[in-house]
Image (cartoon, rainbow, N blue to C red; front, side, top):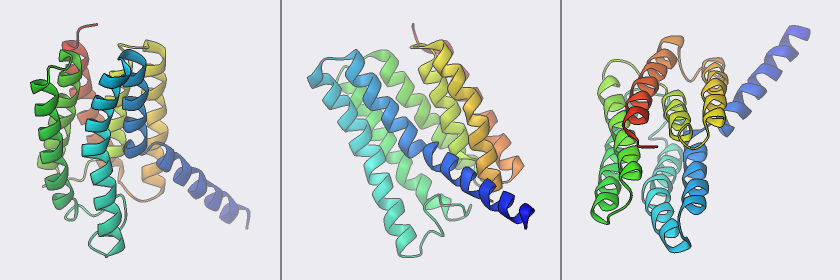
Length: 200
């Protein structure tokens, strides 16, 4: 009885961590906070509307629609084969947003950060032919490297907290240990490259 209660509690904790650490929550939140704290109001509205409104909002609606009609097993698209169409939806959106940011003369660091995110998603798409990497893990690791040039301590804390997100994905059965490690490696590689290229 006690072990059953502990398992149920573990599942609940993992579920909450997974929801809070969902990249569709953490990254848009980061984008909104940083753009409005570092830019004038007009520029902040443009950048945040472009990134959140043209990438994350359409993606959320797409995932909701397809999970509701049964095309996707769940909102996280836990099936590797189902993820193919998800990547085909995300990559063009990120490509267009990257191009608009560059052509509209936005700061080089911003353009580079979004471009590296595009590269991370594109590589994840290629890797998906063989293994379903954890986007929860890879994107939050990447997020930690986005934060580090602004606040090193918070960036490191986010990086460390991503281990809890990785744990939650395994506990919930959404990813295997291997898939979490692949996501970790991808997030670290692209995050480190972006961090090295961004001018502080």
